Every structure is written in structure tokens, then in C-alpha cells.
Image (cartoon, rainbow over all chains, first blue to last red; front, side):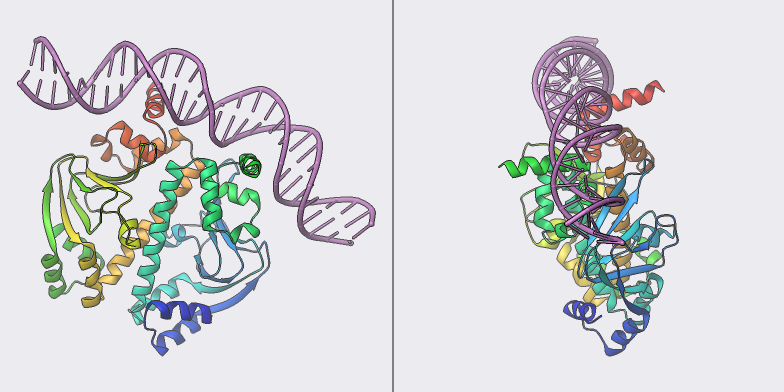
Length: 191
Length: 191
DNA sequence: TAGCTTTCTTACCATAGGGTAAATTTTACT
DNA sequence: AGTAAAATTTACCCTATGGTAAGAAAGCTA
């Protein structure tokens, strides 16, 4: 929990009361590899701040194929924000790729922090702005780069994530099949 | 300008002083079709709220191909948020697809509103949250849908935009070539 | 309305990446 | 260590989409 508090303090001044409020609505939990926190089709109430390990969010399409939206490591938030924000059932599944530690919040309760501690809006806004920028970049990269180029970029952007992920996780993030990724890796090794 | 003020008032209580501040830092401008507001490679200082017409933001890759990030119509914001947020030169170009009216802000000045009128954070946060959700959806659609499916979805999501856009604008948004889109349209017409 | 320019369509062949399935390697379990 | 399970690689052929270029259509301008 201290990780999160410190991270927030880097961005805004956090009153002791606000800090207490955060403690009161959160729960630090340790999760084994494979644990599913949110399952496609179910109600989403929780959002998570990762302090250790690696998680991913993905959807399963009508043919049963998985598509990874996000990998989350230390200091990232993860949940199904589509569901939370549109008040629908989960379109995503969130699972632990490794043994992980996360701080769990009820999304509605966490949202309530803005009423009691408006200064928190600023922290949230900055987070969202950064997130929007990274999503814009991801979309542009997907539009203009070839699969090998996207893979190279992925390795640069997430050097630590690769240890924890299966190849088919990465493939499903890049928008290619596991077999294509394998071919790309072979070509890369030749050079 | 009233459109924007009303839109904000739907989301938060706007003090008269805050409203005045918004007026003091904004400028309503009318733009001809083809006008370029932000050009790839140049410094980005401005952000725009669209009140009439249609604009798009796109990047040009190393082969000279265009890739559309966003179409913006009435009530949307448009700029190069990658550049604004990372303090780099524009990676995007923003141009008018039709004669348009926009409200222009200096991005830094607009950001300053949060210091004087913290209640504005809430409006911004909600905007960003909605935007993040739409970007998440776009990424998932790009990963799991075929080109014809993406085109159908596009027509549903932006029925009004199609009148203003060239086919190659839409193709560059969907991540396909103009020729592929043409084939898809022919197939669709057959049914 | 004629002529120019831009956009869209069509046709051809090329290629990146997909689908299936089998072979191999790695990992996990007892 | 030995076995089973999971993940990865390889091979084969297939399909969707791309690239180039030419032709048709639509939109502007004089």
C-alpha cells in the first residue's frame, strides 16, 4: 500500500485524512499464478493497483480466440474499465500471469474519493492523460508498423514483461498468431 | 462557445468566474475545408473543441502513408495529445475535412484552469474516462474484427462522418488500403 | 458544357500472415 | 528421474489484403 501512497504523493499533496480514507477502502491481496480477478460476462466491481508480479486483461472473441488489451506490472492499474464505465458486464478477463500482489478497491468507492477529497481528481486526471497518450501511440503503431516492427517495439517497451508472459500472450497483444510470432523470432535470431 | 459551456454545465457546476475565465482564454474561429491546424513536426500549443464541421488527426509514416487516429465532429476535442503531453513536436497533423467552427485554446492556459477552478478537474476526468473507454474498444475491435466487420462498425458509430470523409480517410482509420475498402463496399452492395 | 483534377473502382499479381496439424522442446508434477 | 502436460516450432497450403497501374466516375473551374 505504501507504494501507491508514495506514487500519489509524487503527483499531489495527500492530506492524512485522504490517506486514511484510501486505507479504509482498500485491501492488499496476494494472488497465485493463474488466478482470475475479473471474468468476461460477470459483474465488475473491483479495480486493482499492482505492487508485484504481472497481470493481463484480454477478451475472447466469438471464435474463442484471445486478444490482449493490457499487461500490467508494478505501479499499473488494471480492471475492465469498459464495464465499469458503461455499467455493463465484463467484456474482459483479468488474470495473474505470475504470483502477484495487488491493492484491491471497489471501483465505486474509489470513485467516491473525489467527493471527499477533490484534490484526488488531479492525480486521476494525470493518470488518465498518460494512459490516453499510450493508447494513442498503440493505435498508431498498430496502423503503421509491420508485425516484426511491433514485436521489436514491444520488447523495448516491456523488457521485463517478457519473462512472465507466454508467447501466445504477446502474439495476442500484437494482433498476430502464435505461429507468426514464432517465425518472427526465428528471423530475428538469424541476424 | 455556448455549446461548450452547456456541455460543461451538464457535468459540473460552473461558477460565473470560471465561465469568464474560459471565455478569456478561448477564441472561436471558422475554418475553410482543408485548413491545417496542427502540422506534423511543428510545435503544438493549441487544442480545439469542435462546434461545427468535421476534422481529423492523422500521422504520415516513413513510406508517406497516412494513418487516421481520430475523426472529430461537434462536441469533440481534437489536438495532438501525444505532443502536448510529452512536450515533443507534433507526430500528428490535424486538418479540416469540411468548413468547420472550433473553439481554440492554448493547451497550457486551459490546463491552468485546474489551478484556479479545481472543480474543472471533474469535467476533464469524465471526458478522459470516456475517451479511454472508446480507445480500449477501438483496440479490441482492431484485434478481433475483420476489415469488413470494422467497416460496418465504423458506419454504425459515425453515420454522419461518412458524408464528409473521402474513402481513403476511412480506409486509413480502419487500417486498410483504399482499394481494399472499395472491394469491401462492392461486396456489401451485392447483398 | 468542356476540360482538368481528384477520387473511386477494377484487374492483375505479390506477400504477409492465418489455419491445421504434427514434431519438438520446455515445464510441471509425482 | 520419469512421465505427462503445456508451450513452441516447423511445415504445408490457403486467404485476406497490399502494391501497382490503368480506367471510370465524380467534382470543379472556366
